[in-house]
Image 1 (cartoon, helix red, strand yellow):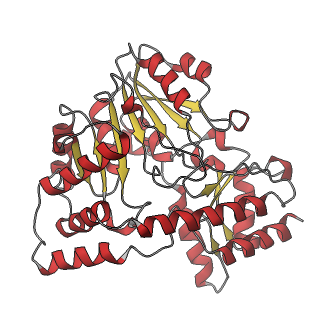
Image 2: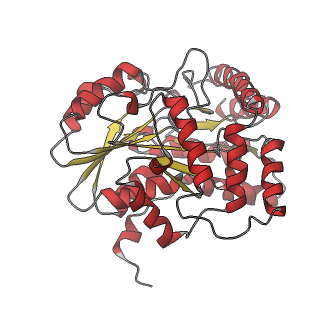
Length: 386
């Protein structure tokens, strides 16, 4: 078949490809430890599930407004106002089935051929994929280990041109787990202040932070509330990946455009899922605290374990649930070692190159798995490396 040109520019999310390979090996009877997928291994909290069940039983099984119900949008606006310290209203909110459509829709709405978009590299692969899809130029912003995987301001300034129409930031980041310091975000804002460009601030991991790390949204900086799209959702914080519930918070000129894209693609959001999401944001947060505490425990164990492996050098993540060790000391390329660990050790992880060219020399391990499995994975990796 002959497909539209844009289809050939689309990338993919390698985590799902590796998951399929791992499942195939398990079907053959092989033992696989899954450290490849970015999915919390906890059940969705019971109060959230109960709210959705009550909603189904009450008959909330029909169409709802494209951007989300007014109740849902108000709850999100109140939550984001409280957590970011910047006032938003329901008119700023568009809910989508998962947070990924916010990337998809905003890039469709704001970028075209001839425009340039700066994105983090290594970073979530859909950023680059969608920029390429619409025909804009994807400009990688290197996140290097010698800079603690943060943004080098001098380097960033050189990337910005008159064609720059879109900048993506992600903190805490995937795959590095690192946060961008407030001072760096403030310097970025000054560089962009007189530029005609929008910012997509991917804050999906903003509740999963450790130690003294604190979230900081660029929307807090004067003049940037209306220039920024906050991307957030329920999948990571509340272990709701299968519910497909995310949202964007943006200016009131852009929100109706994103809602129109919802109408043209998904029609609307799931009605009873929204009731579960309302309970997630307004109900008890004990489960979130327990989840983050457990991730913190696993973080320390996996980082310590990876650093005992010959040729591995792993820094400690500030948030999210990913470890991103440097493996150049092993002598292997990233993809080569990731395949070797899957087929010889039964440990599924991702090559750093799944997140862009600057991911070469690294692997990503998701510690959304039990401590027992993490420890067993370290043993298996050591056996193969040795």
